[in-house]
Image (cartoon, rainbow, N blue to C red; front, side, top):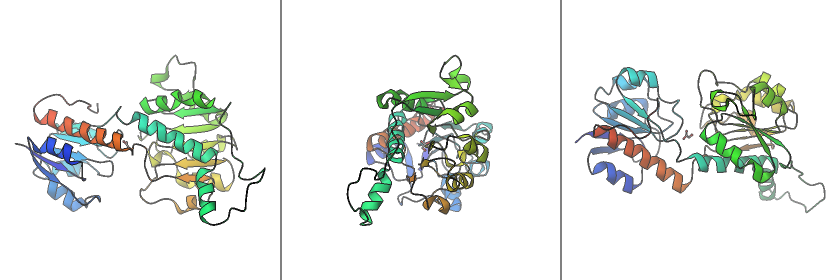
Length: 312
Ligand code: GLV
């Protein structure tokens, strides 16, 4: 019997799956563990099921010498120092595929929300400020005939693009290895200059940190909408507040932030910004599938088998 730490409450069906073979230490209050508690509770564990808010670095791994696997309940794994894990012989897994559709759906929810001023209209009604229907009241932007620029042509970016024709949009991709030969692929600069909606789906890496900075924002059309469901630090929030203030772009819809759960106060002042609290994969079906996949990765590795979805 091995020992497994699970840093958040999980459905009992999945908990029982792990507990059938192993001793489980599960955090039951649904807040992130303090660094001290995290190190203390992981110290004697063989397996760790973590979430994107848990920082797993060399220091934490050194506190858990028996650890064999870190299973992240997320497709992104910028919270884990993967080279440090590899050095220590610890397998890292994530949860790709199972969340692709949910995240793509939510991307469209945000695109539509910012283009058609859904959240702003809701706020207006709740504030008792709606005085009645008018021909030119709260006009938005039509998607039909517009270009959707996807930065991050992975599973989620492509799933978002696959729904573009439904709205009469043409999808284009920022060039990278996976888009070689795709006639819709173009340089990031070309994409920024020519797209009407720019949607970010790239992992957070040293190369993509602040990819959307002042320079990038200044290249966008004044009518462009920026959507971020990747990771907060892909966008320089200070620069975004500046661009919105200067009206260099027409609006933004964000699901992720540089310092979650803190949101740059400058963003709160703009009615043309839709703010979601990191809900990209948050459907009952998908979250259950993600948790189950993380658990199955742990079970596989602790049984001496290959993980199902390793981070390479
Ligand atoms: C969520 O943000 C994820 O990476 O799965």
